[in-house]
Image 1 (cartoon, rainbow, N blue to C red):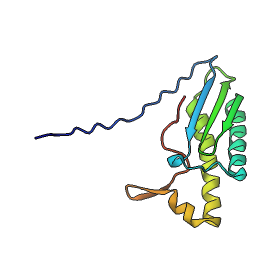
Image 2: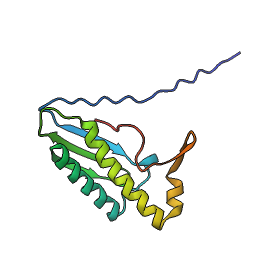
Image 3: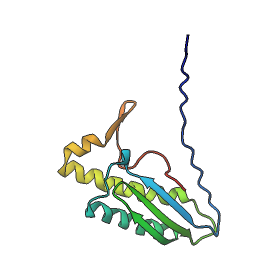
Image 4: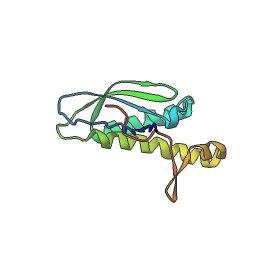
Length: 133
């Protein structure tokens, strides 16, 4: 009898908070959908990056916004920092604005981006996980 063993791999990303080092960050939209193809959504992202870099004291060295993912190169201006807080702040800001916009303008996309997690329904703008650092 033949048995197939299915292994599930979970991507593990480590964020290093090393003073004096820049971070090249990559993160994707939910299911790699082109959610950043509209000027409105890109504006929300640029606004969130600006607010996060001012709040957490980062220099923005470079960025690229593609329709379905983002690349950022940031440099912490303080010795003690946590890059995860920076990412969380900007991703949550964009997701909240997108959800609010869809609630008022496009219920079909709102349904498409809402998933069930146990007994709760959760809106997903970004792919789960920390992205790539």
